[in-house]
Image 1 (cartoon, one colour):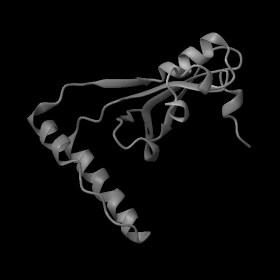
Image 2: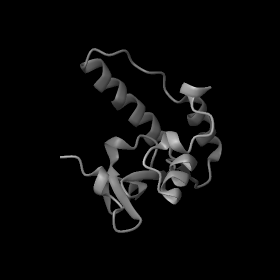
Image 3: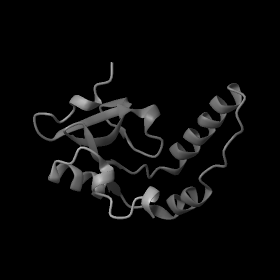
Image 4: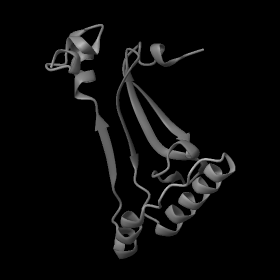
Length: 128
């Protein structure tokens, strides 16, 4: 069953502690390394934003890249290039950082009570 439409129906609702496997560039939780320091915010079944604490350990990122490529090879998928630029930056020293991506059009949709995101996008692709 899909639970997303019910998320945030009684007010803002945060989902946290995502499975670490679903957050490739996020730090893991110190108290439970199976989960990541990642979140999503929902209101009325709409995901408004998501964010996470950035992984800053180059050794761990390299290990994650290698593990992902081993999985891809076992599934007979092409491997992906590693995050070499990110690894280089981390080796010089990357301070603790985080990021959040806000869907502004989704925020406007929730604030105005519109049923469709197409009603709040000023220049949708199908009308451009």
